[in-house]
Image 1 (cartoon, rainbow over the protein chains, first blue to last red):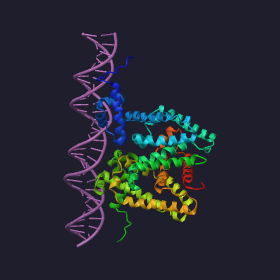
Image 2 (image 1 turned 45 degrees about the horizontal axis):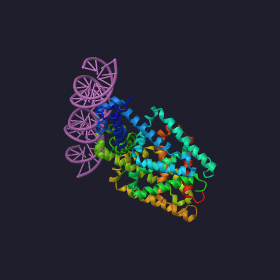
Image 3 (image 1 turned 30 degrees about the vertical axis):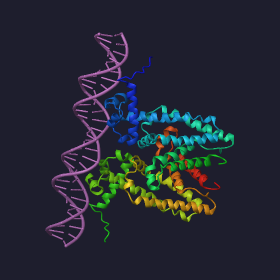
Image 4 (image 1 turned 90 degrees about the vertical axis):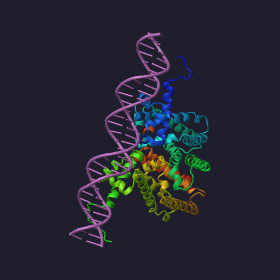
Length: 213
Length: 213
DNA sequence: CAAAGAAGTAACTAGTTAGTGCGTTATTTG
DNA sequence: CAAATAACGCACTAACTAGTTACTTCTTTG
């Protein structure tokens, strides 16, 4: 097949990509219920009719956006190649990565929140998600085992619980940054505040996992 | 003033209370955007006109529901009387309380999530919230100081960071229980799973705070 | 007990929103 | 190059939704 590089006036792939990017922004900004299909069409500079043509309906579009978001974060995690580092360093790298991914991709958090408000009914319909995470939990499990062998990690830590905690201490801080900044009367998004939080999180996990923190 | 105990056919206070309870449920179930004023009226067995009469509009109603929710959790926290326990026990009691409160009051989490989706614009209008939390942070700060004096806690821990982490490790697990149960292929709400999580959380915090965990 | 005011109701409005019917224009292919 | 196919757009609808108008019914109080 010949790959065309000429800019086409009509380009199905490009239109679909623009719609998906616009949908991600709009769903992240307003949630599934608050998102407006007309707004997505406008942002994508596509006709609303095209959304229904390519993606079926609003809920299907949301499901596809969500699948893309999960695939994206897991792909980035795979690229870390934690197996090539000493366990301790690998764990710290994972904590940093998780924090920075949430910071740079705030839509991810909002999309997941919205999906949970709807009791994960879209993710339930998706089949490719489970395998994505099976590999991920396996990776962290292997990392923990390796740390125990190296003599740096305590044995018996559940990789799922650890994963949840690593995610939680970053995710909660960022998703609740607006109410948090009011309630604690400090700007939780100030650069120093973000650095301080990351350091606190690394220490929390290291104290939990390492024999000699 | 004479307190009437006879059941009135018309009772402004009772109607307002029914509306608030119904609104809390509906907002928690569907978020601010997804909630329907008609649905709130039906649930409350009140006429929709009464909602506008007593609470102004949908957003004001949401703000009042949110203020009530924050006041409620902070009131329950005050009642713990942590100052009467050794620091270590008091800290564990606080972790347990936070977890159990989220478990028993799932609307709290959803309301806070919804408020953060809207960048806390309703809480910004509220004045009584800040003082509520100032006292709370002070309480945890005093607890940490006492633990250091008793020789059980490490010095230099920021009470705000600790508060955020205690909330995070429970909150995240529960708010993301639907996607989490799919992603990790385990029922995160099974009684054993809940017990296991609480134990993991207590250990995480104790290792972070205590000199001799 | 009658007047005043508060509690409560039904039906409506004006605006919005997901989704569609049908026609037009560009691109591909036999 | 003509016919088929796919991309695209306009204008519509049916259903919904926050908020209101205009009214009735009950309760309190001078």
